[in-house]
Length: 399
Image (cartoon, rainbow, N blue to C red; front, side, top):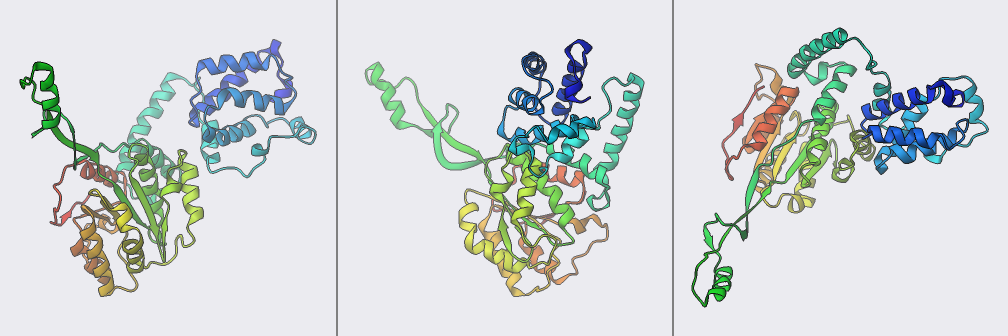
């Protein structure tokens, strides 16, 4: 319903505000019943026929964070533009500047939220949809990313966004007070003995400080890897919220650091920022050149403190020579664990026949697939397991 036709006595204001709040909640905004009540009270104090006033009023109530402003603007524009006479008001009522901008990457999520089935459906219909969704999830667990439709990719993206990586703690060289530690804290023990006239009553101990291992991801964005890389970026964005020490690099014909772009809270904006910062997306592949750039410019900055390197690539290098083996060996020696994620492992009869794969394979600790949800879940278990440092035996896992 158009805002200028909403009258308090008809009750349409309450219905539209509640529906709009449900759409915002489905799009990811934290909108509760209290905000809906505040919005109803605020709309009684302004001119309902003025779109700009309604926009500003609802924005001040429903938007709590800066990153939610773009999603709100998209939802407001889609929800309240059904009437024909509303277009006539657009010429006379100026819109806020951020409402006139190009639709942000989150607009697709807003459209999906507005087209969701109504909450007033019959329980039998919702139960049937639930059964179908469970079956679909079982299929999506094993289905290849490259064979998925747009709707299935959207469903997988939502599943990846909910994944959480358990903290696999690593011992550092630093110590902190720990009653169960194995090292005697002589300074604190002697200081405490001063209270008892020099008699040692309480022995203080120190234990190692444990921190999550840094994760460094090197993602191939060549034409054959673009679908897998994009979904794996969703996974890295999901674990970045829990782990602040995650560094991400994309490479095709050149290396690009997208760590800062991927730290944006909204996943759509983060991936759009990554895409805009890369010039060679879905182009050629120069693995040896990209690894050389990483080893020379970035290895000392991000591979300290027992970092785990995730290399996602099919290994199909055009210029496979001794340089590729040298750079892989150098990368392998600089990190705690080097895990190679290759979508070609989805084939049961896979053999390392390509020259590039043969040169890279001896320098990795684990060789795993990355083509479906099950393979990503297997990677999460591998990252959470405490494989000891300097573990150099090749592990091949198929999902």
